[in-house]
Image (cartoon, rainbow, N blue to C red):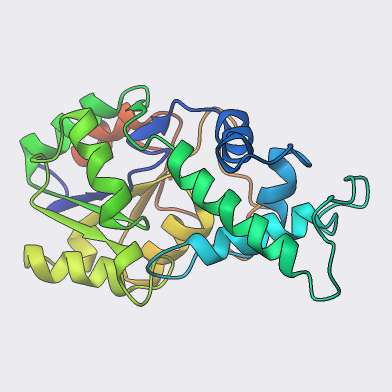
Length: 249
């Protein structure tokens, strides 16, 4: 008998990982837009401000690419050749083409299971209700589930990217709890992100199993974040947690 009535999983970097490299996507966006590459993938990630807003993230990506093009993302980055007008309209137009090229380059089907994920998902399904709570929208995440062959593996799927508020807000967790008709205190959340998964689950009143790899939980790195209920080196240690037998508290 499981120690929990239900288990909710995160998707990206918890159950699956992306097979496309950041370089492939970044430089592919420039190739698709017909623009000579400027900067590096890290320049784009550094200037993107938080999570994209609900809906179409094109403007969000375009804002980031515009900063890369004009050399404002990194003092060592070259000044882009497209900031030709006082209002930056040329850079903005090119940045939007790059954002569209980014979407065209990303293959959301190019995913694989993280080590032990299939065993963890099977263990959860054998013991009770299972759900998925992901911050991505359905348009991106559903194809990943299809590619992995687990589209039918969950009793509820919450695509928080389509909601007004995402993790770490409690809303997506509460939607899953309502759909499953289970209580927060008897539902375990499993995820890899301290900021989104651990914080969000605690805000919603769920115990949380954080999958953090061999380095374990670093209280200094995550200062201000309440320690997860369980710390797992690999996700396939979940079966012991579900049976109340293991997991570093």
